Image 1 (spheres, helix red, strand yellow):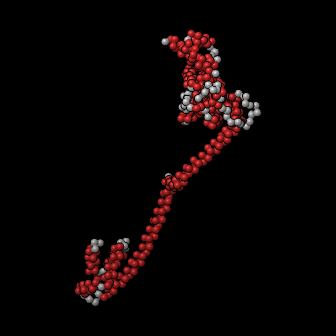
Image 2 (cartoon, rainbow over the protein chains, first blue to last red):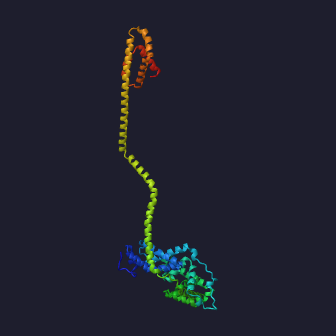
Image 3 (cartoon, one colour):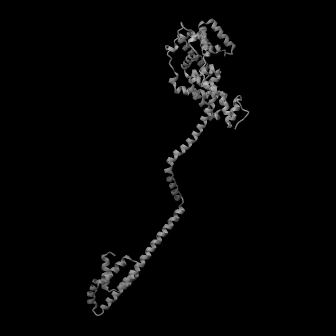
Length: 198
Length: 238
């Protein structure tokens, strides 16, 4: 069954109603519409592509089997994000030791000779990514989730609170503490002070 | 205390202020006033601003090429596989139950069949009646056969006894009753004929329903013979 009036720009409720009636094409459109957002949400939580891929697929498989549970009380993307966040947090809990990395600030990777080269030349994009990933990995799971949802997805504290099932005020405090922790992590690298100031 | 709480509240809103996400103008003014008057607050602002600057410049590594174009087919494949697995699982479950059901089903069927018999008393009674009738008929046949045999035996015995008795009576006519009777009676009673009478009496004892025949024969015997019989019967507690 395929409704030719539906496309990726169609309203979420329209797609969902069509999918509930058995329109597999509507489900495919939902996947195409949200696959990138869900992938990056998972990726920023678990910091690994393969794990993020597994979680992304699980999100849509779970959506397929439980679509009838969605009753339209909240926005559809909130419902989808909730599934994605729960699966990501579960994944982090199961693999806690892999994600609470202890960074050796004295390791070669973090040493910069400021006299010979400028910090910009020394620290290329790859290293910046690595440092940021390390900084995010030191965050507790909830703070990490709030930081990603606020900073990268630009969601309101109210929406974040619905996804995380917490109060709005609590989410604001979580975001502040997450930013502070990242800031402290970057500050501890005395050799990259120049990068921060750059 | 009030100042500390106020500073704390402003501090929490600093990240949103730096990103330009605060829409409350009053709050914006308060934060800017605090920065002007509080050096510590201003330093905090500067450091946080630099951190955000660093984070924004970093782009996470992109997934492999064509990843998103192949994601949907992968998801659909897994959904199909899950459905097939669920169907197989149902059959597997049924099969696993059959392993236990196969030995149990015959026992259950047997119990059901027995229960049906139990709960149909009329049929049971009819069966019993038939059985009882058959048994009774068999018993009657046996009795009839036994009676037939007995009749034959009795007839033969009676004939034999009558012959012997008549012979005995004929033999006694020439003698004195008292003397010859006593001796001859004794002899007679101890002869083979006596055994016939004893046998006859034994047979009578076993087949007590021949009372009429017994009485006639007994009356034809002599008094001594009769007494002898009585003594023998007494001895045998008849």
